[in-house]
Amino acid sequence: MHISWDEYFMGVALLSAKRSKDPNTQVGACCINKDKRIIGIGYNGFPKGCSDDVFPWGKTDKSFINTKYPYVVHAEANAILNSSTSLKGATLYVTLFPCNECAKLIIQSGIEKIIYLDDKNRGSDSYLASRKMLDAAGVTYEKMNHLEVSINA
Image (tube, rainbow, N blue to C red; front, side, top):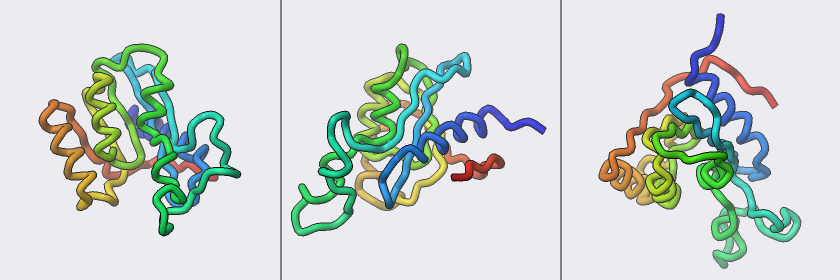
């Protein structure tokens, strides 16, 4: 038995997520073109030159600059930045529904469709803003309800 294209590309996103050193949330993304060719892959992590030994992975602190949030580049952004060609008309497979900041990049890059696994932040303002922008821009999105393939660490 073989896996579907959706399972294959989401499997690539899941495998990419394993590269993230984030102890709380590992996210992976994979962009494909209309010919079902991978044109960009990414995972959440610090920018080049920003060492894990210097920058924090924590989620909470009295000071925002002592958390991961001002430093981490999201998987979607990395997949877009790592793309080998135009993303116009592309599909993005991502393990976590995109935040509002990533939604802006997705729209601007020309990605037309998002397939995601998890939407654990569904009620957050970031998620609501993301959906609002994606809907306005005509970017479609759908939740993948199951994944037959397992990526083991």
